[in-house]
Amino acid sequence: MFRSMLGKALGLVGYTIQYGCIAHCAFEYIGEFVVCSGPSMEPTIVNHDVVFSERMSRHLFKIQKGDIVIAKSPFDPNMNICKRVIGLEGDKICTSAQSDLFKTHTFVPMGHVWLEGDNLRNSTDSRNYGPIPYGLIRGRVCLKVTCNLLSTRLDDSTPLEALLRHLMK
Amino acid sequence: MFRSMLGKALGLVGYTIQYGCIAHCAFEYIGEFVVCSGPSMEPTIVNHDVVFSERMSRHLFKIQKGDIVIAKSPFDPNMNICKRVIGLEGDKICTSAQSDLFKTHTFVPMGHVWLEGDNLRNSTDSRNYGPIPYGLIRGRVCLKVRQPSVHPIGRQHSTGGPATTSDEITGFLMRSNASLKAV
Image (cartoon, rainbow over the protein chains, first blue to last red):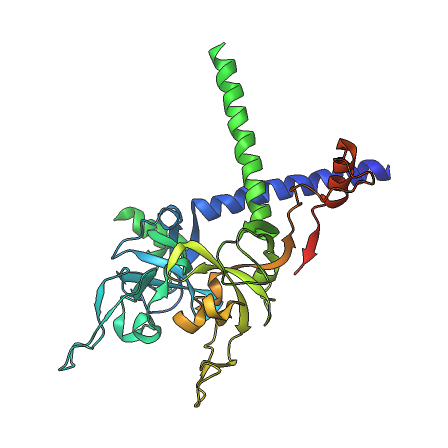
């Protein structure tokens, strides 16, 4: 009685570990959904947007200038940051503001990337902490999940009225 | 005929993917064997030494000062480096050489670690490229695998003639234990 229950419990644990490993490898090598927060990538990605970040580009070293990437924060390994790649290794980056008289430049070192948010006025990025090593990049954002039905609720009408209004358009 | 072969091939692929994922997760969350090269960690770890680096400390953020870690190189994401942690975030690091008159210091920023090799004269480390982000650390070296010695053992014989085959085999068996020496 006890042995059969123990056998079933161990079998369940075995299946859980097995499919957990497969799911983990899928997230690690294919992609994952990420909920973004913060205003640093507006208007491209706004607060609470859900994006899909694929992992293959990063493993194959195919991240290019202009890509939006998810990377580990250089100052907090628990947090992730979502910024746009402005420069790759060896590129020349203009670090002075547009209003400055004298332009300053910097070169991105080997194995590093220069990240900036799209919302330049409200973004902490490489202009503050310098280029980050390529090894911190986790994935490249390729899709944004939008739900048009929910976005039609502009007033305090019920979801059914909003649905009917949407269908009548 | 063709369908059964296709079914068997798909089954084989399925099993391969399944066990490949399990093996990958074992390497990712438990540990892996690493072959070290280069002189920067002598005499602790010499060229061609095999070490075992465990991953749990890094995932649980339990890397401490004095640990030897394997990390991704900040200048080449394909390469790994093996150094000792000299300072954690917030620590004060002395950056001047011992022979300098005026001492210079630096503070390790948040989320970074200061790495140095044990062989200070022949090591490229944080003294050259600064502190590296904690996110680049892969694992902590906890064991070093000592190779069995396979060269001929000193011949022990009482008569003065050449040693017999049984003497060499005994000597070999006494020495050929691959012992795991704690680092």
